[in-house]
Image: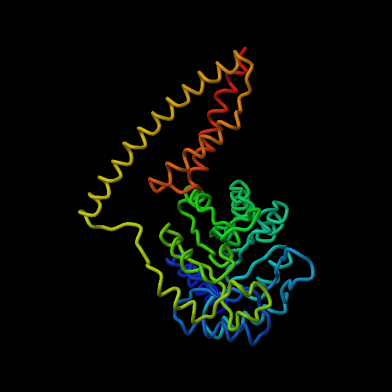
Length: 364
């Protein structure tokens, strides 16, 4: 009987794991049994949720902040699972936390951003999962480093975990920005390109840090073909013990999910595909022209490098670089290019130009 129940459970988890979009929700922190069960009940009533989440152990930035209720909250999640029929997922950061979560039949584990950034911690979790058949989601590290994210995936895969997914929750940047954690969409897109068969879901709660831009961020993630969303909900967000500003009620979550325009990655219509292919071919031609122009630009940079070398002039000319940027900002605004894009683009072009000139300086 136990073996049959285990098989049924594995099949259920597999079915949910393969669902698109996959929606995970629940409180940032499990605070009390009543709070966990009430949130789970109201989430289940929406009919929109595939998996319940709750923070049991909370790695906090500063000491003295609420660091989670601990293992005593795991039975609450177990009850929520029995009450709603929804599988549950929690964050783990140590071998002991993995052991405790497994003992209370947690269905899916995730590794948080503060753990992903530390290879020693990831390896400890990986060692605890050796021989265990359970899906694992891995959040991006706090800092924008794709190799750290990739390394965490590889460590978990090497111990035999078959079902691995990714969570994009944004990256920490210096200074105040619109977001709590800058999305840096290009990082998530590159991770998706490297792992085309791996599920990647978006966590707009941690990206936004506040509720008023949740919908826009979630919509962008779906438009970029993310496989689902993890959004924090609470029965009384204003009085939540952690991250109150970024949590919404289960009913507000339902409204948000119903407001999202769920688009398909592809359409089987021959007319649509033919029109799209024509436009893509135009982009291909323009990309070829851009590559040719960049090649010509670097040849001129080589000549400038030789001239600077012969006249004992430094490679970097700060005033000239500022002039290029200001000129490009003015032109870019007129043709609909964002300042952020222009900075990223010209930074890359400038570094390549410097590398070309440096090579000329190094040649004797």
